[in-house]
Amino acid sequence: MTQHQAHAGVALEGVRNFRDIGGLPTVDGRHVRAGRYFRSGHLATPTDADRASLARLGIRLVVDLRSPADIELDGADVLPEGARWLNLSMSDPARGAEFWRDMRSADLDVLRERLGDGRAEKSIAADYRDQVVSRVDKHAALVHALIEADGLPVVVHCSAGKDRAGIAAALVQRLLGVGVDDVVANYLISNDPAHRYTPNSDRLAMRPGLLELFRPFLEVREEYLRGALEVMDTHWGGFDAYLERGLGLDADRLERLRAALLTD
Image 1 (cartoon, rainbow, N blue to C red):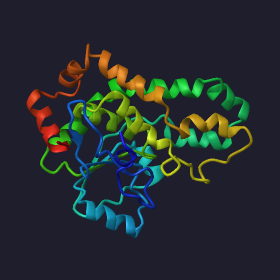
Image 2: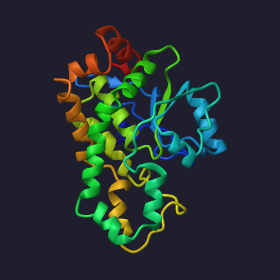
Image 3: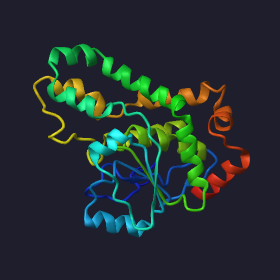
Image 4: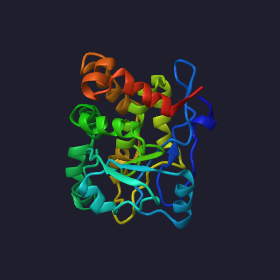
C-alpha cells in the first residue's frame, strides 16, 4: 500500500481525522474507488472552508455513530448541503461525559486502580470485540445504507474518528476484499501526527501522571482492531456466515456494494 493510497483524502481544519479510504488494494487486484467513502471525527465544528470542501465532494449521506450523549457533548453535525443524516449509535470506549468528568476530577489513585497496569487497554479491546456482536444491527444498517441510491458519497464518523469509525471502515474494507494487513495499516493512520486525537483542554486537565493513564484512549492499537476482526471471523462460524446471518447480505447485495465502491 503506497503512502498516497494510505493518506488519500481532503485535509479539513475543523474536522478531525478526515480521510478517504479510496486507493486501498483488494486481494483480487482491484482497488477501493476514491471519493466514495470518507471517515472522520464529528462534523459539529467545520470551518467555512471545510463546508466548501465537503460540498465539492458531493456528500449525500452522513452516518453519525455517536450516542445521544456524545452528540450533546460535541454538538450536532453541520451537514453538507443536500446530505441526509443517519444516526447509528455505537458504544464509545471513552464512555462519554461521565468518563471525561472522572478524568478531570477523580483521584489519581482511583484512576490508576481503574485504568493502570493494562486495564485501560483490556477495556478498550473488549469494547471493540463486543461492538461487533452487540451493534451488528447498526453495522448492518450502515452497509445497507451504502447500497441505496443516495448512500454515496458518504462520511461515516464518530467523535474522534478513530474507534467506532475505525471498526466501521475496517468492516467495509473487508467486505470489499481488502486484505487484513492493509485494513489494519489503514486503521493505524489515526496515530499519525496529522490525524492523532488530542483532547480539548476543557475536557481534560492534564495533572501529573494522568497522561500515561489516558494514552490508550488517545491512540489506536493493532490489537484492538485485530480482536474485532477475529470476532467477525469466529462468532457466526466464519466471515461468510457473518455477512449472511449478521449483516443480512446476500450475494446480490454484496455485489452491488462492491460495484459501487470498487474500480479496476
